[in-house]
Amino acid sequence: MAGLSKFEASLDGLWEIRQRGVVLDLTDVSFIDSSGIRGVVGVQHRCADDGRSFEMRVNETVMYVLNLTGLAEILGVASQETA
Image (cartoon, rainbow, N blue to C red; front, top):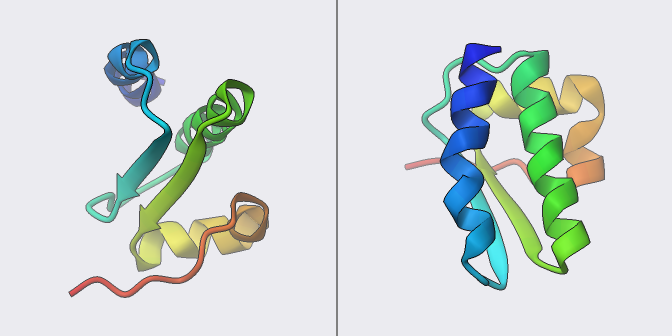
């Protein structure tokens, strides 16, 4: 949960800025568990509530978890290869 708290705290300033969208880059993430998934879903919901677009960039590890949970389709995340 400490990781989730840090993640949520890092987003505090983002919500103050009136950007049209959020790109969540998880390409360097080597592990994601249910707390991390909760954080991602929370960001997506906040964006939807605020009328902002939401996009994710993920690596194979994160994509595997999103596919396993069924969230890849729900969040609109397509498989992406990183160079």
